[in-house]
Length: 150
Image (cartoon, rainbow, N blue to C red):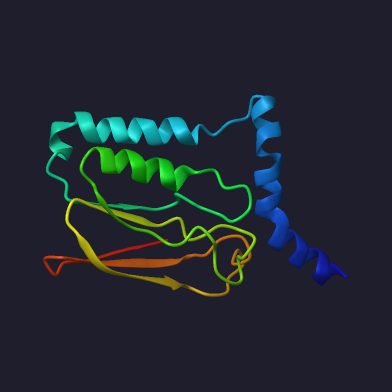
């Protein structure tokens, strides 16, 4: 029975947190993800030293199957509007064992075309039922390989 409880908590922890998220916000608890994404995009537009960036690797911008927050979509839409028109990202649905949790949260934003992508899950770990830790690779049109991992 303790093992069943532990597996249940590991598997349902993030979906339960997503479900309770609106309640927490009503009580004044908010991690301001949308505002932080907007601030990051504004900095990309306004900082002259960032104007020459061609590729940005992002971690912890999670998507999930149940009660998605839309954060990866918000970041991708904003990045496309300022010239990062090419994106490598995992699917919204996480793979086993985190099928009710979150995907890897990895994104690669590029001004150059991306010709090939690959995702790799690191497999089982203590938090594997909640999030797909792994790596994301993108091959750019000029032959450059870009990796990000978490």
